[in-house]
Image 1 (tube, rainbow, N blue to C red):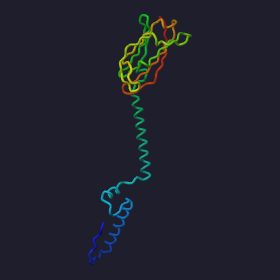
Image 2: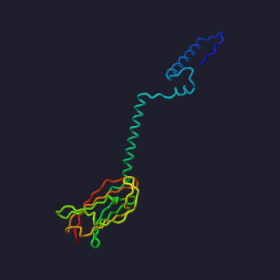
Image 3: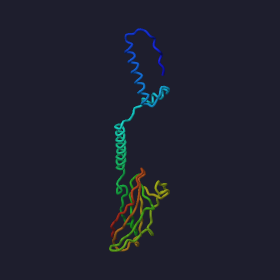
Length: 202
């Protein structure tokens, strides 16, 4: 920056002008010093120097804002979890007798499904040890699905049936232990569930 040499003319306000010019130069020097610039820098550098500087207080407020935003995201995620059904509403279990079979019925809510490979059945006669019922039990046919968790699997929508031959149920009464796992199409996957159902031969 260069200054043109003033013409020497009598001026009663000369001292005031000189003081103003000196003040302008001093202010310019301060701006350049704060911005780390010199007189040869371009207008772009001056524009950068005009950007606001964050104080310690501003930084603390920014961090507080980030924490509040994170907390809000967590709250939203928790609120979204309320959009899913409780597991016993998503997958309802009942028993029925047909001819010589005991039928386990899973009634599955819309947009929910159960995994075929996660089913487990065991029969515990009164006073006896549980007996696995995997062999001999007939399951209804499911659908093929490419799952985010298990890859290509067989799943059940709407309803799943497991038909247990009566001869596998030792004794006249006991408890049937049922294990299963399912998910919602919207993304929630429930833990493996275990339910115990009492049964007595009619």
